[in-house]
Image (cartoon, rainbow, N blue to C red; front, side):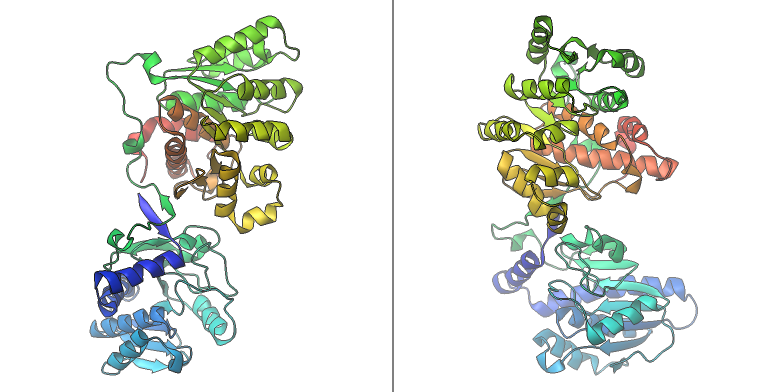
Amino acid sequence: MQYLVTAEEMKRYDDNTIERIGIPALVLMERAALAVAREAHAAALARCPRGTPSVLILAGTGNNGADGLAAARLLSRRGMEVEVVCCGDAARATPQWVTQREILAHYPVVVGNTPQRGRYDVLIDALFGVGLTRPVEGVYAELLRFFNEADGFKLAVDVPSGIHSDDGRVMGEAARVDLTVCFAFLKRGLCLSPGRSHAGRVVVEEIGIDDAAFFGQPPAMFALTGPPTALLPPRDAGANKGGFGKLLLAAGSLGMTGAAVLSASAAMRSGLGMVRVLTPEHGRLVLQTAVPEVMVETRPCKTHPDERGEQALRAAFDWADVLAIGPGLGQEPRARRLLTAFLTESRLPLVLDADALNLLSADRDLLDETARQGREGRAIVLTPHLGELARLLGQPLAEVLADKAGSVRRLAEQLSAVVVGKDDRTLIAAPTGPLCLNLTGNHGMATAGSGDVLTGLLSGLMTQGQEPFAAACTAVYLHGAAGDLAAAELGPYAMKAGDIADRLCRQGSLPH
């Protein structure tokens, strides 16, 4: 697991380390500068293996700039030609900046207000760092435009200047770098668009601030890391198929049987024991051919209900351990009837996706019923993309896009459910507790059927007994890791949803 912090959290942990634990600020700064210098030195040697590499450092007058001044000193000691361009009012500089500037005066570093050379091997952005709250303008913007247009390897100290460290917004003008050297904990804005495209490769360096500085206030967001196999539910070697759980999946409609195939296939790849799919009669042959391991039930899906169909549906509820509904379901009367039954005639754990979410957003009574059951303790997971999330909240999409984390949390609180807010960086929230931001996956997964695969995988993990929030976090992580493997083998342009499902069976070789 990896923590993701806001600027406010980072400041609190920094202050706690200095004031309550007792590690001096200059010690932390020296370790930060050493990390920056190490990466910059390696990049400079790669670009200029012979001769003397040249380095430009843009330094503000805050502590980010002080890190840059300290790195300038260290790089000069490694035999490089180092130039520092200071920007800001030195009279209002932080005490650490003043100290580092006084120290730097004893080293052969050129310090000025404008770049002096025509080209540089390495350019380092140390203007702002975390905590930027207003757009970058004036001379700062001019420097960043120079920085972005210049040739050379580009490195940012902690956060690229102009990127909001909490949500990844571009604040006017922003640096685009090859590498961001991040200190202590990963900053949220480095993982969220568009900030992630500005940050390049991100390395997190240990400088002396760690979880001892939390003092009972850990970060409100985390990401899963490590081998995917370590996240899978434990298995009893002596169990039979019934011991690994039974999933009832309502999916598919005319022209959308493929969604049922993808979801059922992913569920079987998750490790559960048995899957029964409720789908219209015309989907039976397709399902039984594509996924022969699943059972197919068509009677409860007739357009007009009958007594035998209702009996069959009740029997299916009695058989199952977990319910899932939505992939390719459609929004016809039989789909609405099935969703109503899944909500009102069972209290089994429930996963709601795709058309089930569309039906919910169009029917306030069903949405209220979902919230009531969540408050009463039923385990419910919803997997909306951001458009569906906006409809469920009854808010404009623009408002959701402006506050993705807050929107996902808000729906989780309203429905007392786990919400998987699908995006290029998917967010998972329970009504309380930290949020999970997923860092696996790639743009090749933005393809039809990818969400159906996720629903099957998530439902399968819940069927094996994983708690809903843990199952959602694990499923999204594994889904993205399988997508990364597909992209590595096939290319992100050529891959399709079925390739993701196929690679779920190769968890031992998934990248991490």
